[in-house]
Length: 398
Image (cartoon, rainbow, N blue to C red; front, side):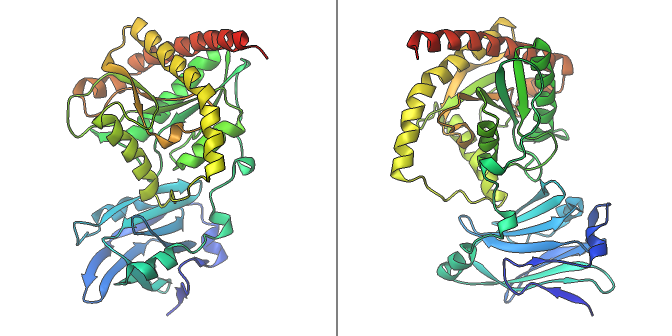
């Protein structure tokens, strides 16, 4: 039997070259896949239609098992038998050409077996045994492979900005890839916001006063840090993140503009901010790094100048959306600790176009005519802010 073994948690396993050159997606075979509890721990088996390059690693806070594979369609993984209620799984595209499966564990485990069997039926076999928190933390803290590290801003391949206008707008369609966001009636927040971002981009370019960059233009996962790095590399004049979340409780509906604040407007805003960060964690991203004291002071100084510009941006967007007679939340401008809005030198806002948990909002969000009205209102709001911001900056002098 031919077996490719992972000897260390962070080893990238390579299969024959012919597998790397396949253009079709490998598929997960649900009938040959499963997650079971044993007397020794957990065993995960993934039946695949063909061999693919792959790797596996452990991550902490919360404890997670992360499997990255080359071009795998994870649809068949939905039927995996989750044998412990505390376990949660998500899967999808992670970066172009690569897929990711993340299993949130119910405690610390060690990887005792990891292999791809390629003789006969192809499968990935993993076995995990319980371990103590200290040993798990040591394994999870091992550095990632250099080629898998999060890209630095200077290394990012910047998307081509379009249009001839002077104002650089970075549009950030939320979620994507293995993180679909909220969902309703077969529609995902990630897909809806990518569609709206493309429509808004076209409206901005047609206006002629804007250049536009998207943080993603496909159904791929983009870490929060990378989204803000793209904005900085683009020398953005403003950053606008687009969402259509769902709230488990309450009757929230209508468009809402959020800006950054450590103290949130209410419990719902706090829950949304926590959920957005949680999606990065479940995707296997490391959010534990902390800014040093000097860096934090410098960023606070930069935010002192940026904050009033951001508040004016929110006010201009709210005014334009209301003028277009588009339904807004009873508190149209709210605040929250959204990590994606933390650029200290770029005015940044998050637009909840609506809430998929609301019947009326879900219907509006699915209507291209309504989305076109919202896009035009946003264009008017950004244009009005641009004029006002230039006037205030001119008053301040060189």
